[in-house]
Structures are given as C-alpha cells and as structure tokens.
Length: 405
Ligand code: GLV
Ligand code: MN
Ligand code: MN
View 1 (cartoon, rainbow, N blue to C red):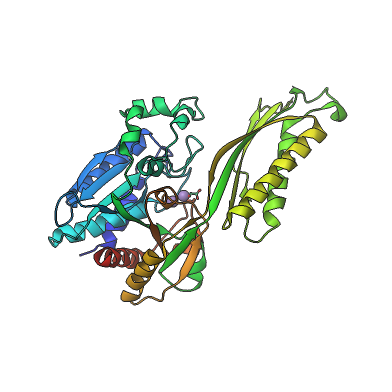
View 2 (cartoon, rainbow, N blue to C red):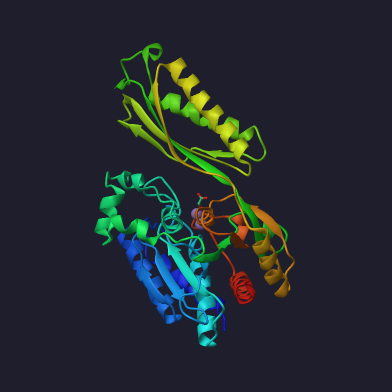
C-alpha cells in the first residue's frame, strides 16, 4: 500500500536534521545534510533499491527493471533547504518517489525500465550562491570553476566536499549520458496559491520559469557618522538601497516579471560608521527569456546610474542564468492521464520556482507534478500540506510510473 502517513512521518523525521534550533535549516554539505542523506539512503535500501552517496553528495537509489542495466526513469527532488524552511519543499518529492518504489518492490513488480530516485544535495544554492549543484552534476553541466566558490565563512566548495568525505575530482564521473535516462519526473509542492484557489490537490506543470542571479558589490567610503557632512559622503548602503528599489521598479513594470533583493551585507556594519561597502544579491525570473534578459540589462544600467550619481564603484558578478525549461508534451500528456485516472480534474500550470528538472533538462525530457500547499506558502516554516493531498500526489506519481512509456 502507498502510505501518505509514512510520507508525512518521513518529512517530519528529516526536519529533525537542522542547524536551526526549533526550525529547519539544512544547507549543502553540512553535518545535518549528512545525517538526512544517510537516512534517505536507508529508506531507499528498505524499498529494495541499491543506494549510495555520489561524488557531489546526492543520495541515489536504483531499482532495476525486468532485467538489469536498463535505462531508467529518473525521479527525485532535493534534500537541502532555505534558511528557516518548511518541511516539504524538495523532501516531499524524494520521499514520495521512494514510496512508489517501495510499493513496486512489495508487490514484486519490475517494469520494462529501471527507476532511479535522486535526493539532490543542493538545489537552493543557499550556501555557495549558485543553485542546482546536485542535479547539474548528474546532468554533466556542473561547472568545475564553482568548486572555488566560498561560503559565508570563507570555506571553498572543494574543501567542504572533502570534509564531507567526497572527492571533488569524482564529480565528472557521475554525469549521465543521454540515453541512460528515459525521462525525469519530479513531484513538488506547488509553492503558489493556484491549486488551493481552485480546490484541486494536484496540478501538471507546463514549464519552469527562467532565472538569473547577480551578486553586486558597491564601494564608497567609510567614515565617521558624526563628522562627515551629508554632501561629502559616499555611502554605499544608501546607494544599494536605491538599487534595491530600482530592482523592484523594473520587476513591477511587467506582470510576468519578478525581482528580489534577498541579501544585504553591510561593511563595516556599525551604528556610527558610514557604510563603506555593501554586497547585495538580485534574483530575476520570468516565463520568457527575452523578458528576463531585458529586465537584467535595465537593472544593470540602473545600478551604474546610481553609482555614477553617488560616486560609488560597482562590481556586478553574474552568479547564474537559467533559461525557461519546458516540460515535454508527451510526458505532460502521460501525467495528465495519471491525474485523471485518480478522479481529479486536470489543471496545467507553470512553475515560478526553480527545480532540479531545469538541470536534468540538459540530458532528458522532464515533467513535474505539483501538490497543493496551504495558502501557497513555501520557503517558510508555515509550509503545510494535508495527508489527503500527499496521498493524491503519491497515487498520481505511482500511476504515472506504472504507465510510463
Ligand atoms: C528554489 O526554490 C528557487 O526557486 O529559488
Ligand atoms: Mn525551494
Ligand atoms: Mn524545491
């Protein structure tokens, strides 16, 4: 039997592995990630899979088809979280996929293809600023240059991997070849309010919006907050604040655009010192690549304008760009039939959030199933789903797997 109860218990169980007392924060390559990953590997083995940690820190399990070595249907999602996160973003997809394999295994059922379940080590990009590290390694698009990226404590990704017991040089070896993977399917909470507003437990994703991420550093002059007259200041924070408002203005200029300044680091960061240097991040997303690219160009121009007017120096680092990833029409059709087979109305919708499927899209066709979440809230401890919806999601996924071709 597919058990929604077990799925939710496992989401709770993974949420215990957190660096945030009383809440959930689990970043890439942390001791908490190690404990959660080991737990997931154990569940994979219990479900009849061969399971192991790979060179980037993903938990990977394989359930052979009706003969060994067949190409696989890949399922999965991520095991890392944002800071002060919910318990379902990422984890629900991994645990539901394991539940589907457990169901097959209990019934001694083998399919004409293998199934692989991946619990990706990094999707959120919280620790090193760039995202989708686990899935890009599997897709063979991991840029080895990011091994030099540093976390806020100054540790490089390469060193963090070694501390985790992994060999960074092994990363290229986990890349799959086209043909090894028949398709990638991911179950994920919706992270938006559409399904709830329409009274539907699940929805079928059409495409994942593209995103771009920048890290911007503005440099002015630090000085005494009491002695330097206002007209002689080069205050990096006042300039950065103006830039953040420009990001908001640009994003608001088009209904399909969203733009966020999510981090601000002020140096030296004292009440009586004029800020000399500020780092902030920019995240821009859109369902059309040309719209996102145009918005980004405008934001860059606005930053330059602000800096010129305020005599600040700017450094703009492009952390990542990802184009829109479309779900494959044939897989959308198969997922829709699985939804209808469980008696639910079929609802198609795009994804505003990023997902591991964006990376897997480089080697295979992808599709996604969204599960309703309360008030559409995610990236928050208020993230919540019902047992009935977890049940609906896993049943649809299981039916999709059974009839996948
Ligand atoms: C991941 O959740 C993202 O969309 O940033
Ligand atoms: Mn997320
Ligand atoms: Mn996610």
